Amino acid sequence: MSVKVLFVCLGNICRSPTAEGLFKARLKELGLEDVVLTDSAGTAGWHVGKAPDERSITAAAERGVDISDLRARQVSEQDFAEFDYIMAMDEANLNDLMSFRPDDFKGRCCLYLDYAINTPEREVPDPYYGGAEGFAYVLDLVEQAGAGLLEDIQKSHLARS
Image 1 (cartoon, rainbow, N blue to C red):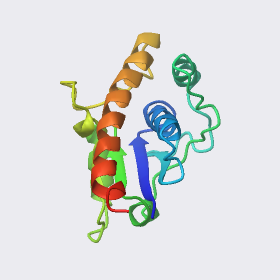
Image 2: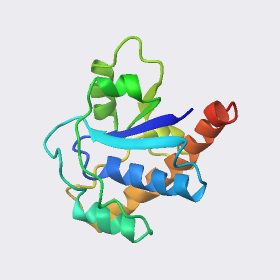
Image 3: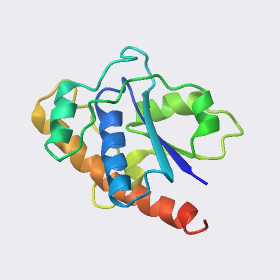
């Protein structure tokens, strides 16, 4: 049995590939990369096929994580059949996801920061129009949320297998 997690932002070049990359790195450290599968996507299709923003790649690399091989794609209705967790980076993207979520979706579709324990933030801010500090802050937030999500997956899915 595997658990599948999809990280979603607007263009899939900043926040969601960063979230996926950090979460995947943590899974690898724990030997869970074959049990918990990940992907990322955007609600908009502007950047389909493109690598993450260079600033995201640099910020992740500064923490020892390589996300340069990821490529942007757009969310599809099929994702609701395939993924157990669909993690939106902000309310606007969550609303977009909910607008085409099938009624029979059995997984969890929510804000990623719902899993963050030590942050007052509810949304991962889009760093695209800012400087390097915004990209570093995104890493801080998604790292916190990743810890909480992993704990939930371990309790809800892995403890049973």
